[in-house]
Image 1 (cartoon, rainbow, N blue to C red):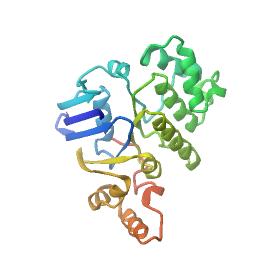
Image 2 (image 1 turned 60 degrees about the horizontal axis):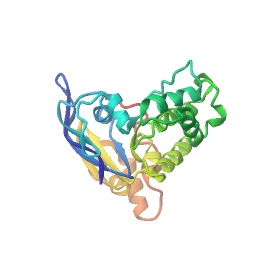
Image 3 (image 1 turned 30 degrees about the vertical axis):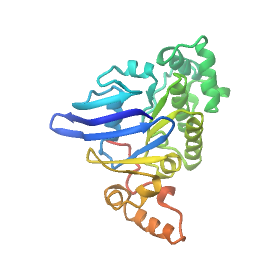
Image 4 (image 1 turned 90 degrees about the horizontal axis):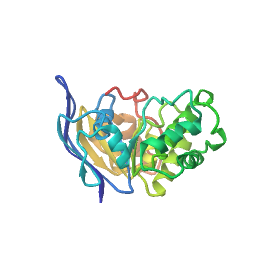
Length: 267
């Protein structure tokens, strides 16, 4: 059953078409990855889905309801939440207070929002830092705080926008494991990332945007061997790795970042 659907979504900014007639669905309980070159429209699609931008054309449905043009806070209250590429916690609040804001205002009401916030911090392994302020956190810890804040809203689906961006390999593995844990407990995940190791490992399906259009969709293995995707985004190294993997001589290209893709999505 589809929990999130986009039907013929188009978003124009003046003469620029950021997303162009994109239709997709995310089923309840699955993890879906979204990849593509910088400027492909990935973050714009997330902003349209989460209510930051209203689509020029098309429809967004969440749990069967038309949420096209709804305010971001209303969409959050319904159970659809999104993290940000650049983490901006409330710097004058402790980690616990940051997470409590999510529990109190972001989603379904709780008898004890602070308890819900503690649970979220414990889940991301930050409960021992609950009374610290964000200035004392590493980049990896800030990313986990961002996840705790959205988890505290008690969401049905989480949209992660480059949650592994800027992390070292060890921190990336921790985030990958955390996303897997979130999905295993029944929550749906839709994520953008340029770190192929992370995205391919956790995704059941992967969708590919290029120049605002959806050009491919399939399993991670299918996407990594798709010639159109290799030409548009993954690069020749992916073709070589895919050929080597089919011959049993190498791991797949999921173990590295795609060529030239380490920068944040510019769309």
